[in-house]
Amino acid sequence: MKDKYDVVIVGSGVSGLYAALQFDEEISVLVISKRELSLSNSSLAQGGVAAVLDKDNDNYKLHIADTLIAGGYKNDLSALEVLVTEGPTDVLNLRELGVKFDSDSQGNLSMTLEGGHSRHRIAHHKDSTGREIVRRLLEVVAEKPNVELLENTLLCSLQKDSGGGFWLSVMSEGGEIRPVFAPYVILGTGGIGRVFKYTTNSAIATGDGITMAYHLGAKIKNLSYIQFHPTGFAPKDATRERFLISEAVRGEGAVLRNADGERFVGNYDERGELAPRDVVSRIIMQEERRIGKGDFYLDITHKDADFIRNRFPMIYEKCLEEGIDMTKDWIPIYPTQHYLMGGINVDTKARTSVSGLYAVGECSHTGIHGRNRLASNSLLEALVFSRRAATDIIVNIRVNGSPVPKDEPAVPSAAGKPLRSGIRTAIRDILQEAHFVTLDIQKAKENLPRIEEMMRELSDEGLAMSKDLIEARSAVTVAYIVLSEDIANS
Ligand SMILES: Cc1cc2nc3c(=O)[nH]c(=O)nc-3n(C[C@H](O)[C@H](O)[C@H](O)COP(=O)(O)OP(=O)(O)OC[C@H]3O[C@@H](n4cnc5c(N)ncnc54)[C@H](O)[C@@H]3O)c2cc1C
Image 1 (cartoon, rainbow, N blue to C red):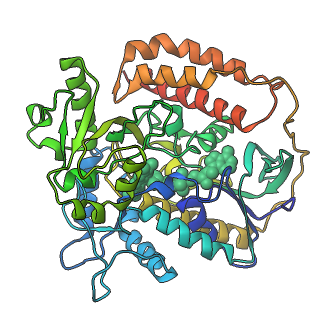
Image 2: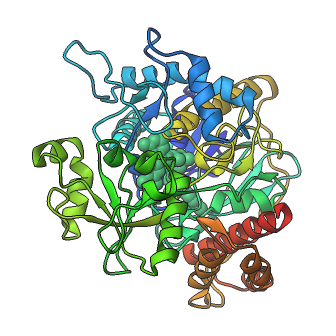
Image 3: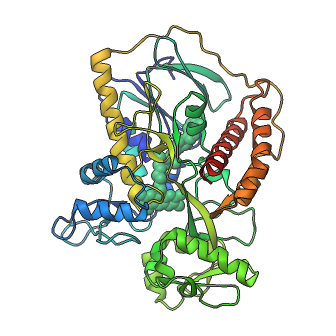
């Protein structure tokens, strides 16, 4: 690792990698990832990428209309137009780069349908689209001589330099913390799922980028716009990971059953199992209150076993690892946190309110999703706006050059007081009570002072810097912003 780069990208998900790809050889780029390069929400994406590619049967207006309906018309229309009109080129670019999207015998992309889309417009790779995109992007980015990719490298702090640009403190795999200067920083740090008790998100999704941008004074918007998914796998052993059972399983005819084995969704909503995610999640919580039992199942056993294994190879395997054969057994499920619609507020060039700081992908708020994300629009958002961020930086570097740092960086120390154990669990429990599927405003009001107290405790500069400390600080900051927003909006 050098001391200075033109651009530092924090995150090796689809947004960070696609941004890195755009820079030519004259621009030096560092990409860091706090865990393995491929461990991210991007790698978990199952369904695919939405894009208007079949112009005979689909058009931009329809994609925009579907997104507005899902988002409760709270979407930013200008950002949405950019997304929908430019996105198809980025998806075709991925294919050109060698991402293997499923296609028919003539080589045409097989576009599938997902909940909320009025047309077949989802490009996909079996049920593991994200893993395939990340695989190929990592290969292509690794070949670029101007890009350095570092895994197990944690961003610990982000400071502005008075001459312009940023000082980043970066902890390497061995635990050494070093300052790095960059005129431009792109945050592609992903979502906040791990601040919740139940989530489909990867272990890295702790809101670090959002927290650092917030403390730098960047505007954060709609952090309380959080999507819950009705069908997260519910393991018997609470210490096991939850994972997503895709909507496509219900799309193929799976039904939901309560603890007594009865179907129930149709009693609340005539759309039944195919009602939108947030609606089905709320129905499950209502049914739990009605019957007083919290066990729920997804049943697709009436379908042909070979069909299930071929259509959902990854989900089938993951269920088997948990002792469930979905061709014969009902899959235990429960709602889980799934996606963040809000984040660091950006314009259509992915610029935050802090000069030189960009945010892309799930940590950003472009406004395209509105109140609720339409399935498969997030990978598209990650592609379109990370390319736009890079393009803007390239223009800036050409016009303005790169500033040189003026200040001495303050680098945190790995020596110091240990972090109190149990603090992250306490934060998760508070969010579970106050903001899980539905908002409990009373609990939000009761718990905000406890969160503020923990925030003070964690801001102690005498605490030893570590990944745990960064993630605990992120958890408390995210909880603080979410609950404050909930209270302000109530
Ligand atoms: C189970 C699941 C299924 C999904 N399915 C779909 C789908 O079918 N279609 C769709 O469009 N979307 C889907 N999504 C959403 C989509 O995958 C994500 O929104 C998107 O991939 C986010 O990409 P990203 O690049 O913003 O973040 P991520 O891919 O999460 O990457 C974040 C990166 O930031 C790094 N990072 C974080 N903090 C630090 C730090 N302090 N220091 C250094 N590095 C750090 C991480 O190590 C990681 O490399 C799904 C999400 C999940 C969880």
